[in-house]
Length: 444
Ligand code: GDP
Image 1 (cartoon, helix red, strand yellow):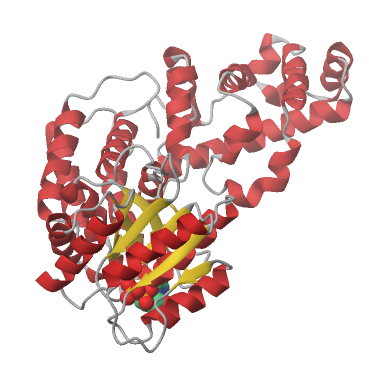
Image 2: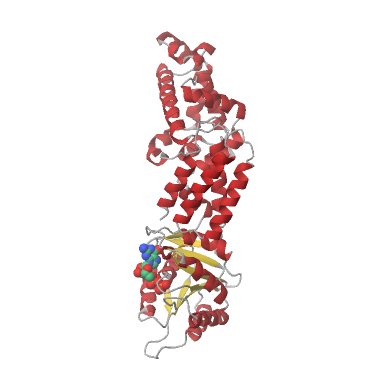
Protein backbone atom coordinates (compact mmCIF):
# COMPACT_ATOMS: atom_id res chain seq x y z
CA UNK A 1 0.00 0.00 0.00
CA UNK A 2 2.70 2.53 0.88
CA UNK A 3 5.00 1.67 -2.00
CA UNK A 4 5.01 5.10 -3.63
CA UNK A 5 5.40 6.91 -0.33
CA UNK A 6 8.18 4.53 0.55
CA UNK A 7 10.00 5.12 -2.76
CA UNK A 8 9.72 8.87 -2.47
CA UNK A 9 10.92 9.00 1.11
CA UNK A 10 13.83 6.71 0.42
CA UNK A 11 14.96 8.77 -2.52
CA UNK A 12 14.55 12.03 -0.58
CA UNK A 13 16.82 10.63 2.10
CA UNK A 14 19.26 9.17 -0.36
CA UNK A 15 20.23 12.60 -1.67
CA UNK A 16 21.88 13.20 1.70
CA UNK A 17 23.99 10.11 1.38
CA UNK A 18 27.70 10.61 1.32
CA UNK A 19 27.58 14.15 2.65
CA UNK A 20 30.08 14.59 5.45
CA UNK A 21 28.24 17.54 6.90
CA UNK A 22 24.68 18.77 6.38
CA UNK A 23 24.00 22.44 5.88
CA UNK A 24 20.65 23.99 6.75
CA UNK A 25 20.02 24.25 3.00
CA UNK A 26 20.53 20.46 2.62
CA UNK A 27 18.06 19.82 5.41
CA UNK A 28 15.52 22.26 3.99
CA UNK A 29 15.76 20.64 0.56
CA UNK A 30 15.27 17.16 2.00
CA UNK A 31 12.39 18.37 4.18
CA UNK A 32 10.74 19.79 1.07
CA UNK A 33 11.02 16.44 -0.70
CA UNK A 34 9.60 14.63 2.30
CA UNK A 35 6.73 17.12 2.46
CA UNK A 36 5.80 16.48 -1.17
CA UNK A 37 6.02 12.71 -0.65
CA UNK A 38 3.65 12.85 2.32
CA UNK A 39 1.15 15.18 0.65
CA UNK A 40 1.09 13.03 -2.47
CA UNK A 41 0.36 10.02 -0.29
CA UNK A 42 -2.69 11.87 1.11
CA UNK A 43 -1.32 12.45 4.59
CA UNK A 44 -3.42 15.25 6.13
CA UNK A 45 -1.92 18.73 5.87
CA UNK A 46 -1.74 19.59 9.61
CA UNK A 47 0.00 16.26 10.22
CA UNK A 48 2.51 16.96 7.43
CA UNK A 49 3.21 20.46 8.75
CA UNK A 50 3.97 19.27 12.23
CA UNK A 51 6.05 16.38 10.96
CA UNK A 52 8.21 18.60 8.76
CA UNK A 53 8.68 21.19 11.49
CA UNK A 54 9.91 18.49 13.85
CA UNK A 55 12.28 16.96 11.28
CA UNK A 56 13.83 20.34 10.48
CA UNK A 57 14.24 21.32 14.07
CA UNK A 58 15.75 18.03 15.15
CA UNK A 59 17.97 17.60 12.07
CA UNK A 60 19.40 21.07 12.38
CA UNK A 61 20.23 20.61 16.02
CA UNK A 62 21.19 16.97 15.52
CA UNK A 63 23.07 15.41 18.34
CA UNK A 64 26.53 14.49 17.06
CA UNK A 65 26.86 10.75 17.14
CA UNK A 66 30.14 8.99 16.55
CA UNK A 67 28.59 5.94 14.95
CA UNK A 68 26.21 7.64 12.50
CA UNK A 69 26.99 9.91 9.62
CA UNK A 70 24.74 12.94 9.06
CA UNK A 71 22.51 11.19 6.52
CA UNK A 72 21.98 8.28 8.86
CA UNK A 73 21.09 10.67 11.64
CA UNK A 74 18.35 12.19 9.49
CA UNK A 75 17.03 8.71 8.63
CA UNK A 76 16.91 7.99 12.33
CA UNK A 77 15.02 11.20 13.08
CA UNK A 78 12.51 10.62 10.25
CA UNK A 79 11.96 7.10 11.49
CA UNK A 80 11.37 8.22 15.07
CA UNK A 81 8.97 10.94 14.01
CA UNK A 82 7.08 8.53 11.76
CA UNK A 83 6.70 6.11 14.65
CA UNK A 84 5.38 9.05 16.69
CA UNK A 85 2.70 9.88 14.10
CA UNK A 86 1.65 6.25 14.00
CA UNK A 87 1.19 6.20 17.75
CA UNK A 88 4.55 5.31 19.32
CA UNK A 89 4.13 2.19 21.40
CA UNK A 90 2.04 -0.72 20.15
CA UNK A 91 -1.37 -0.46 21.82
CA UNK A 92 -2.85 -3.82 22.83
CA UNK A 93 -6.54 -4.61 23.11
CA UNK A 94 -7.93 -3.85 26.58
CA UNK A 95 -9.58 -6.88 28.08
CA UNK A 96 -12.02 -6.30 30.93
CA UNK A 97 -11.09 -7.50 34.40
CA UNK A 98 -14.61 -8.84 34.76
CA UNK A 99 -15.55 -10.64 31.55
CA UNK A 100 -17.18 -10.41 29.18
CA UNK A 101 -15.08 -7.79 27.44
CA UNK A 102 -17.37 -5.86 25.11
CA UNK A 103 -15.92 -4.67 21.80
CA UNK A 104 -18.12 -2.50 19.61
CA UNK A 105 -17.31 -1.92 15.94
CA UNK A 106 -18.30 1.35 14.29
CA UNK A 107 -17.66 2.81 10.86
CA UNK A 108 -19.10 3.50 7.44
CA UNK A 109 -20.82 0.86 5.36
CA UNK A 110 -18.25 -1.11 3.41
CA UNK A 111 -15.43 -0.18 5.78
CA UNK A 112 -14.97 -3.85 6.57
CA UNK A 113 -16.67 -4.13 9.97
CA UNK A 114 -18.37 -7.47 9.41
CA UNK A 115 -15.24 -8.98 7.95
CA UNK A 116 -13.26 -7.57 10.84
CA UNK A 117 -15.68 -9.09 13.36
CA UNK A 118 -14.77 -12.51 11.96
CA UNK A 119 -11.04 -11.76 11.87
CA UNK A 120 -11.02 -10.48 15.42
CA UNK A 121 -13.07 -13.46 16.61
CA UNK A 122 -10.66 -15.93 15.01
CA UNK A 123 -7.65 -14.10 16.39
CA UNK A 124 -9.12 -14.09 19.91
CA UNK A 125 -10.15 -17.72 19.63
CA UNK A 126 -6.60 -18.71 18.73
CA UNK A 127 -5.51 -17.08 21.97
CA UNK A 128 -7.87 -19.21 23.99
CA UNK A 129 -10.81 -16.82 24.25
CA UNK A 130 -14.42 -17.76 23.57
CA UNK A 131 -15.86 -14.84 21.59
CA UNK A 132 -19.50 -14.24 20.71
CA UNK A 133 -20.48 -12.22 17.64
CA UNK A 134 -23.56 -10.03 17.97
CA UNK A 135 -25.36 -8.92 14.81
CA UNK A 136 -26.68 -5.38 15.31
CA UNK A 137 -26.53 -4.31 11.69
CA UNK A 138 -30.23 -4.72 10.98
CA UNK A 139 -30.29 -2.17 8.20
CA UNK A 140 -28.24 -3.63 5.41
CA UNK A 141 -29.96 -6.59 3.74
CA UNK A 142 -28.01 -9.77 4.41
CA UNK A 143 -25.73 -8.16 7.00
CA UNK A 144 -26.93 -10.64 9.64
CA UNK A 145 -26.43 -13.61 7.33
CA UNK A 146 -23.01 -12.29 6.34
CA UNK A 147 -21.96 -12.12 9.99
CA UNK A 148 -23.29 -15.65 10.57
CA UNK A 149 -21.25 -16.94 7.62
CA UNK A 150 -18.11 -15.19 8.86
CA UNK A 151 -18.77 -16.54 12.37
CA UNK A 152 -19.09 -20.08 11.05
CA UNK A 153 -15.83 -19.75 9.17
CA UNK A 154 -14.10 -18.54 12.31
CA UNK A 155 -15.75 -21.33 14.29
CA UNK A 156 -17.50 -19.00 16.75
CA UNK A 157 -21.14 -18.49 17.73
CA UNK A 158 -23.19 -15.60 16.35
CA UNK A 159 -26.06 -14.05 18.28
CA UNK A 160 -28.71 -12.67 15.91
CA UNK A 161 -32.37 -11.59 16.12
CA UNK A 162 -34.77 -14.33 15.07
CA UNK A 163 -35.76 -13.94 11.42
CA UNK A 164 -39.27 -12.78 10.57
CA UNK A 165 -39.64 -10.29 13.40
CA UNK A 166 -39.56 -7.20 11.22
CA UNK A 167 -36.55 -4.90 11.34
CA UNK A 168 -35.96 -5.25 15.08
CA UNK A 169 -34.21 -2.93 17.46
CA UNK A 170 -30.40 -3.04 17.28
CA UNK A 171 -30.04 -1.63 20.81
CA UNK A 172 -32.18 -4.42 22.17
CA UNK A 173 -30.22 -7.04 20.21
CA UNK A 174 -26.95 -5.64 21.54
CA UNK A 175 -28.19 -5.77 25.14
CA UNK A 176 -29.53 -9.30 24.77
CA UNK A 177 -26.29 -10.33 23.07
CA UNK A 178 -24.20 -9.31 26.06
CA UNK A 179 -26.66 -11.10 28.37
CA UNK A 180 -26.32 -14.23 26.26
CA UNK A 181 -22.52 -14.00 26.50
CA UNK A 182 -22.69 -13.91 30.31
CA UNK A 183 -25.03 -16.84 30.25
CA UNK A 184 -23.06 -19.00 27.88
CA UNK A 185 -19.62 -18.22 29.28
CA UNK A 186 -18.29 -16.18 26.40
CA UNK A 187 -15.50 -13.92 27.66
CA UNK A 188 -15.49 -11.51 24.70
CA UNK A 189 -18.45 -9.99 22.84
CA UNK A 190 -17.96 -8.39 19.45
CA UNK A 191 -20.84 -6.12 18.48
CA UNK A 192 -21.18 -5.42 14.75
CA UNK A 193 -23.16 -2.23 14.11
CA UNK A 194 -24.83 -0.73 11.04
CA UNK A 195 -22.94 1.65 8.80
CA UNK A 196 -24.17 4.13 6.21
CA UNK A 197 -22.72 5.25 2.95
CA UNK A 198 -21.91 8.63 4.46
CA UNK A 199 -21.87 10.14 7.90
CA UNK A 200 -25.40 10.98 9.10
CA UNK A 201 -26.99 11.90 12.39
CA UNK A 202 -29.28 8.93 12.69
CA UNK A 203 -26.37 6.56 12.23
CA UNK A 204 -24.44 8.34 14.97
CA UNK A 205 -27.43 8.32 17.30
CA UNK A 206 -27.99 4.59 16.83
CA UNK A 207 -24.33 3.79 17.46
CA UNK A 208 -24.34 6.03 20.54
CA UNK A 209 -27.48 4.27 21.85
CA UNK A 210 -25.85 0.88 21.42
CA UNK A 211 -22.76 2.20 23.16
CA UNK A 212 -24.83 3.42 26.12
CA UNK A 213 -26.66 0.10 26.32
CA UNK A 214 -23.61 -2.19 26.34
CA UNK A 215 -20.88 0.11 27.74
CA UNK A 216 -18.08 -1.26 25.58
CA UNK A 217 -14.57 -1.73 26.94
CA UNK A 218 -13.33 -0.90 23.46
CA UNK A 219 -15.10 0.95 20.67
CA UNK A 220 -13.14 0.40 17.49
CA UNK A 221 -13.53 2.79 14.60
CA UNK A 222 -13.06 0.75 11.41
CA UNK A 223 -11.79 2.73 8.44
CA UNK A 224 -11.07 1.76 4.86
CA UNK A 225 -7.54 3.00 4.10
CA UNK A 226 -8.47 3.45 0.45
CA UNK A 227 -11.00 6.27 0.91
CA UNK A 228 -8.33 8.98 0.91
CA UNK A 229 -8.89 12.29 2.68
CA UNK A 230 -12.42 11.22 3.68
CA UNK A 231 -10.82 8.92 6.23
CA UNK A 232 -9.85 11.91 8.32
CA UNK A 233 -13.24 13.68 8.16
CA UNK A 234 -15.09 10.42 8.86
CA UNK A 235 -12.83 9.75 11.83
CA UNK A 236 -13.54 13.19 13.23
CA UNK A 237 -17.30 12.69 12.78
CA UNK A 238 -17.21 9.35 14.60
CA UNK A 239 -15.00 10.75 17.34
CA UNK A 240 -17.50 13.53 17.99
CA UNK A 241 -20.67 11.49 17.41
CA UNK A 242 -19.89 8.16 19.07
CA UNK A 243 -16.38 8.37 20.48
CA UNK A 244 -13.93 5.53 20.07
CA UNK A 245 -10.96 4.08 21.91
CA UNK A 246 -9.06 2.70 18.96
CA UNK A 247 -8.79 2.53 15.18
CA UNK A 248 -8.64 -0.42 12.80
CA UNK A 249 -7.23 0.23 9.32
CA UNK A 250 -8.66 -2.07 6.65
CA UNK A 251 -7.75 -2.80 3.03
CA UNK A 252 -4.09 -2.02 3.51
CA UNK A 253 -3.52 -4.55 0.73
CA UNK A 254 -4.98 -2.08 -1.78
CA UNK A 255 -2.78 0.01 -4.01
CA UNK A 256 -4.18 3.42 -3.07
CA UNK A 257 -2.02 6.01 -1.38
CA UNK A 258 -3.30 5.37 2.13
CA UNK A 259 -1.63 8.33 3.80
CA UNK A 260 -4.94 9.62 5.12
CA UNK A 261 -5.28 6.50 7.23
CA UNK A 262 -1.85 7.24 8.63
CA UNK A 263 -3.14 10.62 9.78
CA UNK A 264 -6.09 9.24 11.74
CA UNK A 265 -4.12 8.64 14.89
CA UNK A 266 -2.61 12.12 14.95
CA UNK A 267 -5.90 13.84 14.11
CA UNK A 268 -8.10 11.97 16.58
CA UNK A 269 -5.55 11.21 19.27
CA UNK A 270 -6.69 7.57 19.35
CA UNK A 271 -4.29 4.69 18.64
CA UNK A 272 -4.40 2.27 15.73
CA UNK A 273 -4.83 -1.23 17.18
CA UNK A 274 -5.12 -3.50 14.17
CA UNK A 275 -4.50 -3.61 10.46
CA UNK A 276 -6.47 -5.67 7.93
CA UNK A 277 -4.84 -6.51 4.66
CA UNK A 278 -7.03 -8.89 2.70
CA UNK A 279 -10.36 -10.62 2.44
CA UNK A 280 -9.32 -13.86 4.15
CA UNK A 281 -9.96 -14.21 7.87
CA UNK A 282 -6.31 -14.39 8.77
CA UNK A 283 -5.31 -11.32 6.74
CA UNK A 284 -5.16 -9.39 9.94
CA UNK A 285 -2.57 -8.35 12.50
CA UNK A 286 -1.76 -6.16 15.46
CA UNK A 287 -0.59 -2.74 14.30
CA UNK A 288 2.99 -2.00 15.33
CA UNK A 289 3.92 1.66 14.72
CA UNK A 290 7.64 0.90 14.65
CA UNK A 291 7.36 -1.92 12.13
CA UNK A 292 5.06 0.10 9.91
CA UNK A 293 7.47 3.04 9.98
CA UNK A 294 10.45 0.94 9.00
CA UNK A 295 8.37 -0.71 6.28
CA UNK A 296 7.45 2.71 4.93
CA UNK A 297 11.08 3.78 5.03
CA UNK A 298 11.89 0.57 3.16
CA UNK A 299 14.81 -0.21 5.37
CA UNK A 300 13.94 -3.52 6.97
CA UNK A 301 15.48 -3.69 10.38
CA UNK A 302 18.50 -1.71 9.30
CA UNK A 303 17.42 0.96 11.74
CA UNK A 304 17.62 -1.43 14.67
CA UNK A 305 21.08 -2.32 13.47
CA UNK A 306 22.02 1.37 13.38
CA UNK A 307 20.86 1.77 16.94
CA UNK A 308 22.81 -1.21 18.19
CA UNK A 309 25.83 0.00 16.28
CA UNK A 310 25.56 3.34 18.01
CA UNK A 311 25.77 1.64 21.34
CA UNK A 312 28.54 -0.80 20.53
CA UNK A 313 30.97 0.93 18.23
CA UNK A 314 34.03 2.76 19.25
CA UNK A 315 33.53 5.91 17.20
CA UNK A 316 37.19 6.57 16.54
CA UNK A 317 37.95 3.07 15.44
CA UNK A 318 34.80 2.90 13.30
CA UNK A 319 35.75 6.19 11.69
CA UNK A 320 39.14 4.76 10.78
CA UNK A 321 37.73 1.55 9.35
CA UNK A 322 35.00 3.34 7.41
CA UNK A 323 37.54 5.69 5.86
CA UNK A 324 39.58 2.72 4.68
CA UNK A 325 36.51 0.89 3.46
CA UNK A 326 35.78 3.21 0.59
CA UNK A 327 39.32 2.90 -0.70
CA UNK A 328 39.44 -0.88 -0.35
CA UNK A 329 42.35 -0.61 2.11
CA UNK A 330 40.73 -2.62 4.88
CA UNK A 331 43.21 -4.95 6.56
CA UNK A 332 42.77 -8.14 8.55
CA UNK A 333 43.66 -6.13 11.65
CA UNK A 334 40.62 -3.89 11.01
CA UNK A 335 38.59 -6.95 10.22
CA UNK A 336 39.46 -8.40 13.61
CA UNK A 337 38.66 -5.15 15.42
CA UNK A 338 35.37 -4.80 13.58
CA UNK A 339 34.50 -8.39 14.30
CA UNK A 340 35.09 -7.82 18.01
CA UNK A 341 32.97 -4.66 17.91
CA UNK A 342 30.16 -6.37 16.05
CA UNK A 343 30.20 -9.23 18.53
CA UNK A 344 29.57 -6.78 21.34
CA UNK A 345 26.21 -6.16 19.64
CA UNK A 346 24.86 -9.64 20.27
CA UNK A 347 24.79 -13.11 18.69
CA UNK A 348 26.00 -12.86 15.14
CA UNK A 349 23.09 -14.77 13.56
CA UNK A 350 20.65 -12.13 14.83
CA UNK A 351 22.69 -9.27 13.48
CA UNK A 352 23.14 -10.70 10.03
CA UNK A 353 19.43 -11.49 9.90
CA UNK A 354 18.67 -7.79 10.17
CA UNK A 355 20.54 -6.78 7.05
CA UNK A 356 18.37 -5.99 4.03
CA UNK A 357 18.20 -8.94 1.68
CA UNK A 358 19.17 -11.31 4.49
CA UNK A 359 15.96 -13.23 3.88
CA UNK A 360 17.47 -15.08 0.96
CA UNK A 361 20.69 -15.78 2.83
CA UNK A 362 19.05 -17.68 5.69
CA UNK A 363 20.83 -20.96 4.99
CA UNK A 364 24.26 -19.43 4.91
CA UNK A 365 23.46 -17.43 8.00
CA UNK A 366 22.52 -20.57 9.88
CA UNK A 367 26.13 -21.70 9.49
CA UNK A 368 27.57 -18.57 11.06
CA UNK A 369 27.79 -19.18 14.74
CA UNK A 370 29.81 -17.64 17.51
CA UNK A 371 32.11 -20.68 17.84
CA UNK A 372 33.03 -20.30 14.23
CA UNK A 373 33.92 -16.68 14.90
CA UNK A 374 36.13 -17.74 17.82
CA UNK A 375 38.14 -19.80 15.37
CA UNK A 376 38.38 -16.93 12.92
CA UNK A 377 39.66 -14.71 15.67
CA UNK A 378 42.23 -17.33 16.65
CA UNK A 379 43.49 -17.53 13.07
CA UNK A 380 43.91 -13.76 12.75
CA UNK A 381 45.67 -13.63 16.10
CA UNK A 382 48.09 -16.26 14.79
CA UNK A 383 49.22 -13.94 12.01
CA UNK A 384 52.09 -11.48 12.16
CA UNK A 385 51.29 -7.73 12.01
CA UNK A 386 52.67 -7.63 8.48
CA UNK A 387 50.34 -10.44 7.37
CA UNK A 388 47.33 -8.73 8.94
CA UNK A 389 48.19 -5.45 7.26
CA UNK A 390 48.70 -6.99 3.86
CA UNK A 391 46.94 -10.36 3.57
CA UNK A 392 48.16 -10.77 0.00
CA UNK A 393 51.59 -11.88 1.34
CA UNK A 394 50.07 -14.90 3.06
CA UNK A 395 51.51 -17.66 0.84
CA UNK A 396 51.44 -21.44 1.26
CA UNK A 397 54.14 -21.78 3.89
CA UNK A 398 52.76 -18.88 5.93
CA UNK A 399 49.32 -20.53 5.83
CA UNK A 400 50.85 -23.75 7.13
CA UNK A 401 52.54 -21.91 10.01
CA UNK A 402 49.36 -19.96 10.92
CA UNK A 403 47.29 -23.15 10.90
CA UNK A 404 49.64 -24.95 13.27
CA UNK A 405 49.97 -21.91 15.53
CA UNK A 406 46.20 -21.38 15.83
CA UNK A 407 45.25 -25.04 16.09
CA UNK A 408 43.18 -25.13 12.89
CA UNK A 409 43.53 -26.76 9.46
CA UNK A 410 45.17 -25.08 6.49
CA UNK A 411 41.83 -25.19 4.76
CA UNK A 412 40.30 -23.01 7.44
CA UNK A 413 43.09 -20.48 6.99
CA UNK A 414 42.51 -20.52 3.22
CA UNK A 415 38.79 -20.03 3.76
CA UNK A 416 39.33 -17.06 6.02
CA UNK A 417 41.74 -15.34 3.65
CA UNK A 418 39.45 -15.90 0.67
CA UNK A 419 36.42 -14.76 2.60
CA UNK A 420 38.22 -11.68 3.76
CA UNK A 421 38.86 -10.64 0.18
CA UNK A 422 35.24 -11.35 -0.71
CA UNK A 423 33.96 -9.47 2.34
CA UNK A 424 36.17 -6.50 1.57
CA UNK A 425 34.65 -6.37 -1.88
CA UNK A 426 31.11 -6.79 -0.57
CA UNK A 427 31.47 -4.14 2.12
CA UNK A 428 32.73 -1.71 -0.47
CA UNK A 429 29.63 -2.39 -2.56
CA UNK A 430 27.33 -2.09 0.44
CA UNK A 431 28.90 1.15 1.51
CA UNK A 432 28.19 2.44 -1.97
CA UNK A 433 24.63 1.21 -2.05
CA UNK A 434 23.33 2.31 1.32
CA UNK A 435 25.79 4.91 2.46
CA UNK A 436 26.19 2.80 5.53
CA UNK A 437 29.82 1.91 5.95
CA UNK A 438 30.45 -0.79 8.50
CA UNK A 439 30.52 1.37 11.57
CA UNK A 440 29.18 4.44 9.82
CA UNK A 441 31.58 7.31 10.26
CA UNK A 442 32.22 8.81 6.87
CA UNK A 443 30.02 6.44 4.87
CA UNK A 444 30.75 6.45 1.17
P1 GDP B 1 -19.05 -3.51 6.49
O1 GDP B 1 -20.13 -2.91 5.66
O2 GDP B 1 -18.31 -2.45 7.23
O3 GDP B 1 -19.51 -4.60 7.39
O4 GDP B 1 -17.98 -4.10 5.47
P2 GDP B 1 -17.74 -5.61 5.02
O5 GDP B 1 -17.09 -6.37 6.11
O6 GDP B 1 -18.98 -6.17 4.43
O7 GDP B 1 -16.64 -5.39 3.89
C1 GDP B 1 -16.90 -4.72 2.69
C2 GDP B 1 -16.07 -5.34 1.58
O8 GDP B 1 -14.68 -5.13 1.81
C3 GDP B 1 -16.24 -6.84 1.48
O9 GDP B 1 -16.26 -7.19 0.12
C4 GDP B 1 -14.99 -7.41 2.13
O10 GDP B 1 -14.63 -8.66 1.60
C5 GDP B 1 -13.98 -6.35 1.79
N1 GDP B 1 -12.87 -6.26 2.77
C6 GDP B 1 -12.95 -6.15 4.11
N2 GDP B 1 -11.72 -6.04 4.66
C7 GDP B 1 -10.83 -6.09 3.63
C8 GDP B 1 -9.39 -6.01 3.54
O11 GDP B 1 -8.65 -5.87 4.52
N3 GDP B 1 -8.86 -6.09 2.30
C9 GDP B 1 -9.64 -6.23 1.18
N4 GDP B 1 -9.03 -6.30 0.00
N5 GDP B 1 -10.97 -6.30 1.24
C10 GDP B 1 -11.58 -6.23 2.44
